[in-house]
Length: 119
Image (cartoon, rainbow, N blue to C red; front, side, top):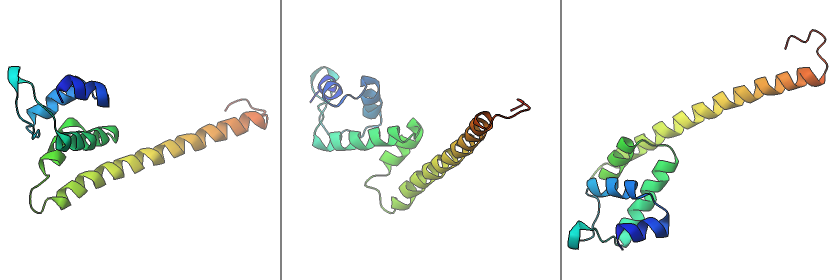
């Protein structure tokens, strides 16, 4: 498939596909007019890239993660990248939980008719 076909079929922005090509992770052949032909392995890697993007990894983190595929003893580094993002996500969740507690407290004050009307 060409970049346009992949972009339409899988709803992947062409910019991301071009960045992916620059990382030289494509296994397909470079065809006429410089257009890559994506194969099933490329599509599988694109799926991983989209998942990493969806969970909030930066382009640099995604590139590093993807470049580690196929290299010996790199499972630990890929796990470290995911663990770092997991910890950041948990921290965000905890901060949001604290915000919810504050919101709920203020709503409770309103419902209970806070006489001072200061909250």
